[in-house]
Length: 265
Ligand code: IPD
Ligand code: CA
Ligand code: CA
Image (tube, rainbow, N blue to C red):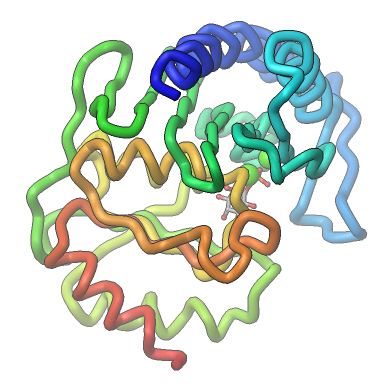
């Protein structure tokens, strides 16, 4: 599997940068984009930028790896029982993208026999490519990265995410506990970027009560390879249904936050 996986990993790095240029062009001309809302939810937006980027990724994968499965936010699932599968969010942080807020990225993960084995996340605005392959370490633009050594909420920033897919009660008690524990939070609109910032030592953790596989699969392996701790996201059909996500820089902080997020159990 090694050579087959490494080929895909190298290909994914080239591909994510290529489509990053296309996405950046849309971003710089975002006033011309026609915005649609998904399923009537005014906060869940999509434009031709998301659809074009996903179509380019899917076409490239079809011609280079026709034997692989695919799951993309905009076009759905195909052949997920295949040995290798690609999980793609063409633009994570669509609201930030459309409102000109800079925090968005393209996220591509590779699964081998249902395990996440590679992830690449490209932020074209800041020219930052985060990447990892299982057993090979995590990198930001070719420099190794490492999660922070913080063990308490007082020692750094937590990223929090929430959406209208869940009831506010799954979120607000957690926020309350984090503040009571001396923590403080940010939400930038891109779950993928905030989770990968845990790998880069910029955040000490990230929590969201429900998120989809295309948002986090790539960042999960990058956090793990950077020495961080993440819940078993793919359990309970996480690939198709999504799950909660908790990623932390150290085991101590993971266990502490794991107790806090169980307040609803
Ligand atoms: C969303 C972003 C957001 C998170 C949501 C996601 P999108 O993805 O990652 O930060 O809170 O759960 O759906 O819609 O920008 O691709
Ligand atoms: Ca997303
Ligand atoms: Ca998206």
